[in-house]
Length: 110
Length: 116
Image 1 (tube, rainbow over the protein chains, first blue to last red):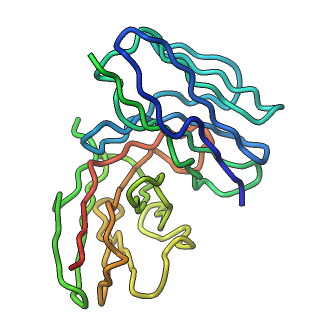
Image 2 (tube, rainbow over the protein chains, first blue to last red):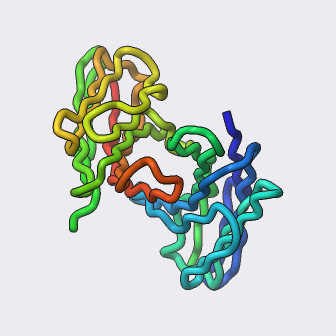
């Protein structure tokens, strides 16, 4: 099956800093989503982004499907950004079951 | 409208016991998914329902695990003869159709299962 790798595995920031999280995948995909799991375990969808760039406030994401990676940018980080960020992909011609990466754990200190 | 809800939020049981975990999806969502998440890992797919039927149960680890969705809404994940390795957070998600590549999944808060 498809392999999804996320980096870095852990990230510690001071409030106000910017960061870039990366998701590499081993096969062509039809769907890529970024999720945030807060410290209480709730998973929230951030972006549906199989290709191109999207922005939502301080967050933006870019997927370069031909090179099989996606980036999540967090600008002016806040303590509420803490948690684990996952990317999940659906492969071309595959089922509708997403494959998740292992996530990037982010801690933002005040 | 309410989001996806799961009960109980925590369940502690003894090895060998039977447990049931419940998921209430968002009203109107036809697709429902169960995942298992171990510490430090991403969600791992277990089973996917399209309406009342299990469209894909390829993620169930063995025959001790079973799930139902008799009326196409609420789903119950059932685990027989629990083992310590079953300890994890069990997540439920729902989406409108489950058949569109653009479908967004909405997750519940999870049930933390601990098998002693």
